[in-house]
Length: 352
Image (cartoon, rainbow, N blue to C red):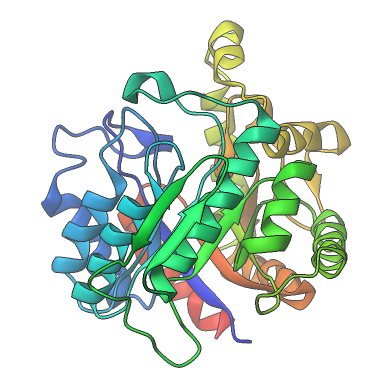
């Protein structure tokens, strides 16, 4: 399967996300649409639109961006708990129909400020059980009619989502991405996800996780097409190797100016995030150019590790992930607009 390349659009309430320029209109429709339109122009398939309480609603942002674009595919992040399955299935089916089948979904099961929107936050095992039930039910609502489901977390009676999701060859419904590194998360991915999305770990670690998930899929009797794999990582690309590393190290030095207390407050306890933080103990640079220092000074999520180098350096690294079986890539760097243009011009042609 050929690889697909997406970017990241920062739907944030506060400006300055990961070095993005601080402007009053940073999350205006014009600014966000300009990024989506540039992604079309520079050869990207679409972009991940992140989610979390206290941020602009992801599906609303994605809907606005599809209305301003022609081919842009939003990877809409969503959390069970914030959404009920039937509401979510209906809303996304509507957007998929209006956009001509451009919707992708990233199910997020990590902790959120659930109490703020009137939901409870189950313990990890029950949270992932709820997520699995959510995914199974949404898939049924997209592909079946008159659905009745009586589960532990959700119930529907004689439910038919309208409009129907338009079916296309090889795509019966929006692709369902999922992340998570705990055993509970991996069981969900192996059973019901379409794409398991990894963060920027070393090649050997990704190889081990792919093999484990494939074996787990077999043991659990997966009934869906084979699980696919994706990589969400920051890519620091400059004209030369030397310039890229100089810029990356200067940025880390600036990040290190934060106080230790502030950094501690940013730390997350999710298994996948902790795996990334722990990489720094194995070395500042792993493989050829996986930079772990950002995780020591405050980087989180996809900003914890960076692939650094010239276009050739980074393309070589991404091809090595592709050789392991990665077919979905979600890349980013800041400033987002400038870097999607740079990497669209310099990096994507090397990967196609």
